[in-house]
Image (cartoon, rainbow, N blue to C red; front, side):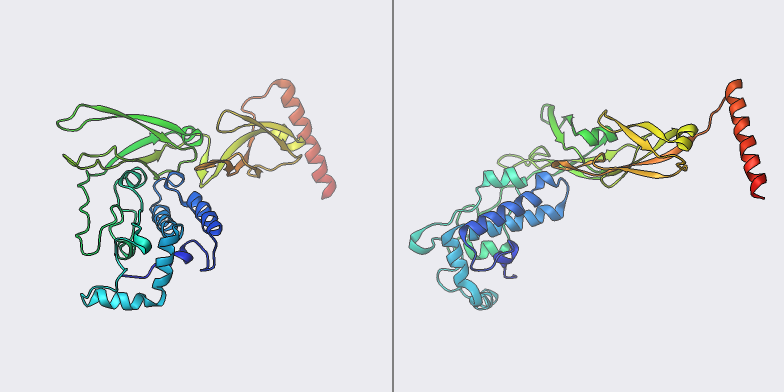
Length: 327
């Protein structure tokens, strides 16, 4: 069992004040919260570590007990390895002054992690039963059975991924009436991401908790835009006269807005213009957006009126005259 450096987890030193701990926890919890990182297992694991560190360092008595452990951890580790009882006061049960430590309640854990234990083996070994504050020598609490997780693919348009949407799913289980679940899908969701609906999966039977429902996102190809991370790329038709003489063209963006793009004179086909902040939003951060890259697609007329043909003929004569003068 490895020693957990809770100070390092929160990016603090041992002289950190209560305000420092609270500030560091809030900053890191916002960054790694599972609701802001749907389907990101790394962020979920990091959030659990941050939650555990705050659970210990944010409680003055737990912090005192943890600080007293210090260099004596190897002594505790050796006692555990040899099957001996660790020194008094280590493990679960009452702390200094007879206080009983409280961590996260089962209801809180169920809401956040769908029944998964949010604490490490180190925490349980040092502070006891976690959910129940088990006394030294007592058997660890037996976790109720949990139903299986259910995967369900969901197809979205790029527009829906841009704005965010929801899906109502009808779930049927053998021996149970059909039920309807509505799951909110955040704006900016990526292809292949998973959105969790806690407690909406399979049943575990009497006394157990349901598993989770995971929606696996499949974003369908879009005829106008290609998504690359948070950035969007689109081909923008530009009349040949505008490409030569300069002007403005309209660019339709996701979300229904229309942008005006200034085209400099003598713009070549394939030139790319960057429209800042008109790409995909970041999940949980509606103001943080990627960019839209507009690729110029010069449009050659498919038909000419007689007057237009005469003008193009005149242009060709000018080009021929310029070539003769240069040779």
